Image (cartoon, rainbow, N blue to C red; front, side, top):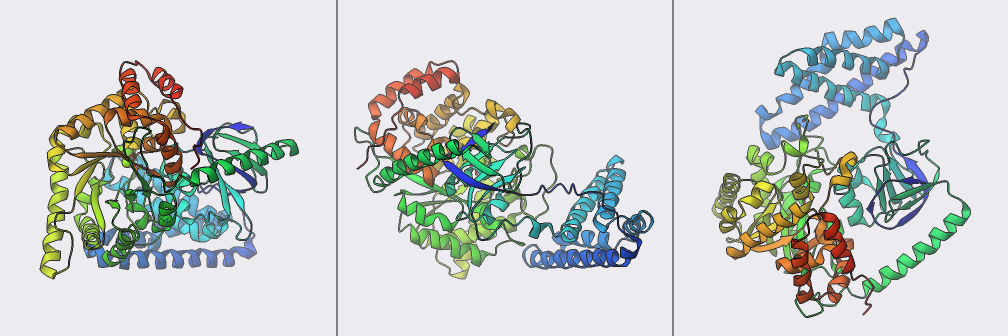
Length: 577
Ligand code: PEP
Ligand code: MG
């Protein structure tokens, strides 16, 4: 048994499918002299495919960003035609009889190291370009994309060193029944997506396996205990089958609560909304009786594709969500890319601290054309439902003002074009940076609502990377510092009459309910799968009791005592309807 971190609950059993790592650790393959011509042909084919791919991406970018922003692609094309780089590759193949991919990898390493040593930012950036182009070429030479595809006709459990959000978008949840990764964090977007999909997930097994898991190994993934059993005994398999059946009965009982009004035992009503990343989740949103969509993570619309989604395409999606929700609140968050979410077709700088770097609103305010396209699409869709706009990662009033300026410009344009939209659309900001908490009183008068993003907020308050399993034990939403920050935020909002909701993962944690009751928060937005368990606990907890517990929490000096209080007040027996 290997013990990791349970990142999405439930039990999954079946055969492993191991996704090969993308670190290109292929063997140092030699070729026969008679294969040299064939090997060169393979190299030229790879170069041709890479160039075609870059050209296609470039053309799509030109239409969105204009010629000047696309020079990066010309630089990449130039590397594939560069005689010095190509001579190096060909030399390695010809003189050392190494396979094309081995020669390309060695040439990349040589040039990257050479440029990296230079104390010149421009040259360092060229090293990044070479790495990027080299990886693209290696992808074509290795056919790696095809190799990583799992079986199409039988269920499997995905095992990988690390998964990216865009790989998650590819997953077919009818077949991919569970996930195991060596790296990752419980509030990483991969973990959030796994919970949304209801797929059990254990992460953080790096260094904890005596032998690596192989494709075909039989696994039991216990997402609640954070355990993975590799080729377990028949008795254990039988025991887990029984546990799985019990979990299913509980799930069926919870389902009967879907359309029961969500309120406390003493009648205080609550909005339990859903966090979504695609329209695919809407059926589940309705099935689980969500009060609306409290967070639409739109960045996933930009993933798993080769170019930016155009205004029309975005409009169709936002409109679809608004219409399907039939007047319920739909909070659309503008692009929150960067951090652990990357886009293959946008060059984001390689950063030592991506979470502290170029991400979210910082990118939108830097690439205002991209931002305006999205805002225009959201505004147009606002005519068809109850849409609100949410800006991510705001840390100053200037950022909020700048974002609003772009919004005003988008509104002016639509007005001139005679396109209908909701004039006084509500604007909210994510409270997920400590700076925003501390100046919440300054920000509040300028917005209609706050949405507290505890995932990032906890990461930034405690200086614990939410993606880093080495410090995962320090990632603690119940730290007294977090509770104090929540209190500051809510008090500032209440003083300005601003609506507050919580949309981080903490919102879906039943232990936290007394915190919201004590603070006077009445809207939570969470993974679809958490809605019914939270409603179940809510129905058994009273508002007055919550306020008393909250007072106790405020006097606790550490999260251990906070959790003791919360755990002793936990209500989770299913009160089936
Ligand atoms: C958060 O940070 O809490 C949040 C909801 O946003 P995301 O998880 O997408 O960063
Ligand atoms: Mg966030």
